[in-house]
Length: 103
Length: 405
Image (cartoon, rainbow over all chains, first blue to last red; front, side, top):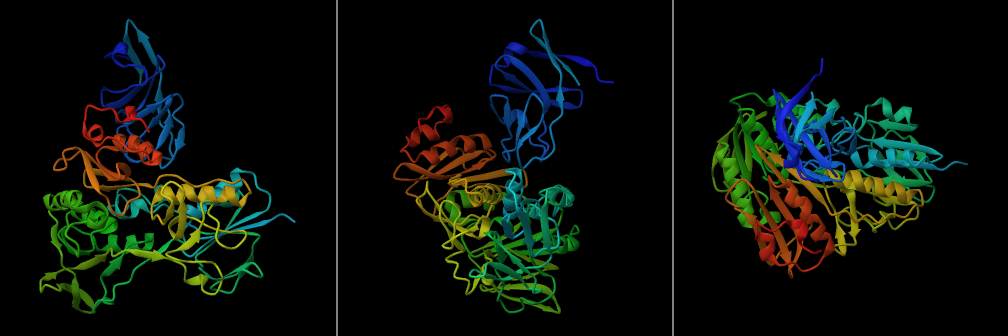
């Protein structure tokens, strides 16, 4: 049963256009700020598990720095290979500047 | 009658073209012909994750095998083309079957250069191009076995890394001063040599194989300088050459591969080439280049398909590839053969740096070690062909996105 976790990360610490990595238990989650809206997804690229938080964010597209795979952070859809499997995405809510993520 | 699209070569470039034709909703038949028995697959894992048993073959497939029939792509696998009749416009396979075409794409890739050294036909001497080759090498791999890798280009370097990661005893022999010396030069090459030594590869530079010794099976490698390395098997990575033998007498112009223009067109109407086999006119570098890497196969195959459909697309992607070795993610972008200035961002003796190869203050190419983001950002500067200030490139406080292109 998924449940929401209040992280120790402040939303204001992640600027628009920026990525951050947040660990929730054993889950490695990446968070993207797309024009003030936050999206959470698995940090590990589905191609070869590189950290997506260390990649680039262009609009709502995250680009893996290792091999160039691209995903839509809103849906997890693959936008460019070499990845073929979509990313898992998680609901995000901001309350009192704290990011809550449902993992 | 609906046109017949025929693609010779069922690897990434060919599959990418076939998929692009169908995505565009083309009427007519699409036939994908390949020499290997497997459905189209990607080769990068063969020297890395697949070789180490960490990735399945299925994960390397371009599409699941059922995809092709479901999308109206006829696959003819396990049989190579033997000739093209460009007057009567058909492809003939080695088993005599003929496939008429209206539009033809040649994407036959490369074949490995053969060793001519004494003893090269002994058992236990392998090369690596296909999944069948990779399976033969995998069958040799168990911890403690002794391997000699001949050649430290990309394939040799990646195989050496994979073998060491699986606990084999590895000796690597390379005629140049360093791995990848011709492409990257001494500064970067020495760093790659050190990476392999730190991980326990016995590296032998400026020496070549004189002979392979053994009775039926290879048991030792003897070098020109008189060194002798006992071994259980050998992997040779001494390069590849374009697979164009079947074009003899076809009238299709070849010169270091199949010569094509920026639209992937050969000298003959309705006949195109893409991928490793294509010696393609690159409008950014204003010369022909032939690229043996994943991105080129995928993207150029797709571009060729658009041109086959009469939707002109100039293929001008900057060549880019990666080579993962141990914990290094190495990436290269651009095209260079020589340089008048090497500009390094970060410490070349460390595990994270970007090295740019410049001519006349323009960046022709760059290699990144564990710096994929910097590399991505420099591709724009490579494409722009504008002079850059090398101090700003080297200055880590400069955001490469802020440099005018």
